[in-house]
Image (tube, rainbow, N blue to C red):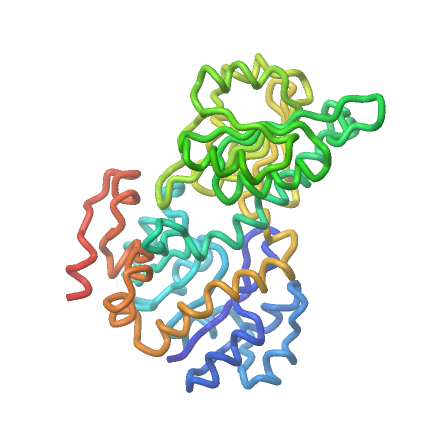
Amino acid sequence: MIIGVPTEIKNNENRVSLTPGGALELIKRGHEVYIQDGAGANSGFPNEFYEEVGAKILPTIEAVYDIAEMIMKVKEPIEPEYELIKEDQLLFTYFHFASYEPLTKAMIERKAVCLAYETVEKADRSLPLLIPMSEVAGRMATQQGAKYLEKPIMGKGVLLGGVPGVSPGKVLVIGGGVVGTQAAKMAAGLGAQVTILDVNLDRLRYLNDVMPPNVVTRYSNEVNIRELIPHMDLIIGAVLIPGAKAPNLITRDMLKDMQPGTVLVDVAVDQGGCIETCTPTTHANPTFIIDDIVHYCVANMPGAVPYTSTIALTNATLPYAIQLANKGWKKACQENKELELGLNVVKGDVVYEAVAEAFDLPFVPVDSHLN
């Protein structure tokens, strides 16, 4: 198979979808890998690293899309890329369709095969291609939240860990999944007082067992959220419903109950956000203020640490990419249910129910394209 890796063109997206080591593993199996000139540079992987393992460098994004049977990306295609996508071309990347209707309709129109990292799902309901970036984003959520609590950036002026004689900051994490766990772990490590909310009692029991004493768990409901938010310095939204839009658990009217300078970090913003007042921002302009509350809503947080993120992502995606390249997308999805669940849009049809429901589009069972 011919695999193309374009340079990411989303604002301040510095990651690349494939390391030179990953390219080598595909090339060893008889596949051709084409890398756009400079695609890996911001992640610490210059052209020569790819050329050393046998990948070929192409000068433009148009050349990569034109030659490739499978495009491997990090973030969803953005508008300048739509016209480059060919009918039947396989796109293997994060899509987050349910949060952006124009992207969904563009991929339907292009009649591409869209296999989304975020909905590849194991039998135990875990999301193996989302986990590594969720781990990065969860840790970064606390790191960024701690920074934006500083007064020069309009935060409350609170040091999360406190100092002797001064109470530490208080952090609320909504969602006890991978993102929430990593965010809480980082906040606890800084010495903050941390509360994690979740609706899964088994998960809360697990977190109660493994977290340090400065982390407590509470059941997630509106009453508890409203009770807690007036006392918090940093609130991290870490709610995920696979493939679907995140629910708004922090609503606009709740802002009035928060102290001025409280920081909100919505890690779910690329799935529509779980904080009503959050809209996607970029690393160039990461924050905005509503009612004296600082909002950090960067939709590609791991893009700020591209070396770590690129290696972690390739570690997770490569085994699936090899299956797709060796067998073709159809046979690979027939033989691997995990990959089948990654199919969202296939040749003009929406085959992932949550995406169809998000925009009231016709839903076509994926079996119609696999049998």
